[in-house]
Length: 311
Image (cartoon, rainbow, N blue to C red; front, side, top):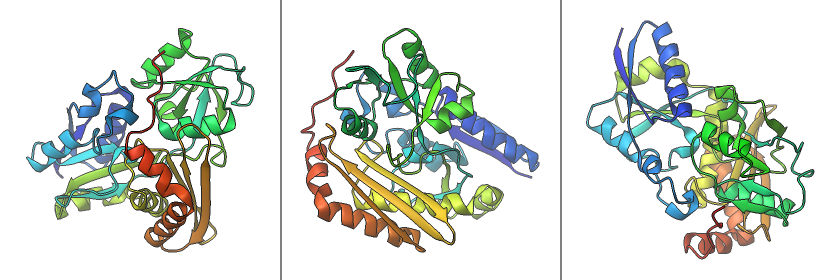
């Protein structure tokens, strides 16, 4: 059996993920150690992610450790992995997916609909902000950075009436006490790859790939490939107002895509069914672009969007 070194960010959720993969590998008889690596995204904590705009901000330093041979595999939240994986690396496994949807977390309010007028809602995601504002233009959206428990502490302290988080993160950490609503994907389309883990290795490392093959989930691979193809077609990183949600229905993949103006004034939705995940993602992405998504994204990429006010 092998001695495997995992590269991971140091947040509570990242370490849960790395330890989860480590435990599965140990069950197979491997020796495993975890190396914590600080990424650009971990170092920049006082700016809304949408204003940083660096693709790979949560992965670059980990990939450098992988390239240098300091670690043998990297465990990422798949939604943090850029859609164009650098040529020296490959995604060896995409794990069985947790719930990919977003959740409303609040001390008092049961749903987005029931939030009071001009309620303060915390999120640093342009995707979430845009879809929230489309539903409730009155809401006051404020940036919210930090790991899951930091965000929950800010909610508990009364800084916000509600915050929006990924269901997968709160489920994995067992922090579901204040989850009031699992938001349907038709209302808030999730981020591409949300809920799945991507295991990255050096390109062509056959031995490591074989050790990890049991972790690769066929359904997660198909659905997230379609979502990431859509995101790639739109030129998006993980901090753009783009949603992508695929699920297997009978023998086909059903893909929903969203491009939204950050102020919620325009939300474009497109859905399609198909058998080829890459082709399906490209087709839905192309349709969104031709319907006006290109103009929205040019404005966002041109940094013409005002940054949300600090609380």
